[in-house]
Length: 82
Length: 413
Image (cartoon, rainbow over all chains, first blue to last red):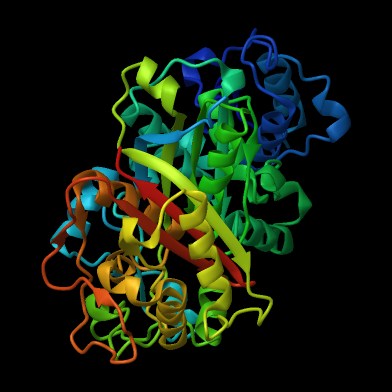
């Protein structure tokens, strides 16, 4: 079942919090994973896999480099959720 | 130029007796056992013959953040807890990162991560394998994490010599300072191996006590009823510091770290050489390198794991090394209380030796109800014993599978 972008953002913020300890409120759509949130490629990998499980989507490795902001990831998940 | 001297200015630990070295030492002097029942379902599922171990008194989850727990193997979590506490105990010295070193030994390394991730790979596939698996399971994961935490850049080393690892790492730290590579080294050992596989392996080799009906009495070195060691976990870390450096900053000095002696048995992969030739060479080398004579050694913290064969081999080695002089050395067997911390054992017992010299007290072993007549040593039982005034020195023995023998000497300052 598709979720709203708000719900996806909240779910993603939880995943980021669990992996990095960042407050969920800091995980906003316009934030860059690397430049703003200081998330390295290893943590990004874990976040991607946890997001796949949580949202029931597949995020191919080739796609991950296009997801530079939190909003990019939310958009991708929303578009690809069945 | 005179030789650089090394002193101990900080202690930190997390052990089966307490979340700090102070609580642990209090437990040692009170004669408490750290044994606890293992409530884990795997004990029954795999029909393990041993139902208890000396697990940590304080869970790392109570001390570290959620993220730290996720990103570090338990062995590294314990090491980081002990290392931070040791540096704090040393007064959080300000030091050039290039003069600060790390040496953390482990017997088994990141075995929880290794086997948990193997389970995940088989059950869920490659996408679910944690990307930090390799840096979490590698044996140097603790040295690396402690170096990161403390900003230590003089070098971060890992000694691996089974149950002598923790003692050997302190020797590595000692050598770093003596050789001029560092002014402070955070040195110790860590182990987190109460996982079904190593547990089953030790049980299969008949190395573990199976006294399930009286677990506080299971670890009983030197008692005729001893039937194996009790597996334990935790970490012990000391801050080693160059003497002039410590003096200049007005640091509290617990004791001098005087020397390390080492040898290898080349006899059998697990059994100690029964006459103690190798172990005695390590002890004699340590005393000689410290510039001391036998008469200076008033106390020995023995390896004494509570195995039928090992305890006698060590007793023989002590006699072989010191002859009649051993009559004047009282012997503590602290594993009767802590259990056997494997790669952290020599480190934690090194801390105990430092505290013994500092407080001039030799802890009493517990559970020696019927002393083994084959052990010809002055073992401290009942009440702990006061060590003499004046200049004193103490020896700490550690031995490991593979035939590794390590002896440390600490002395009063």
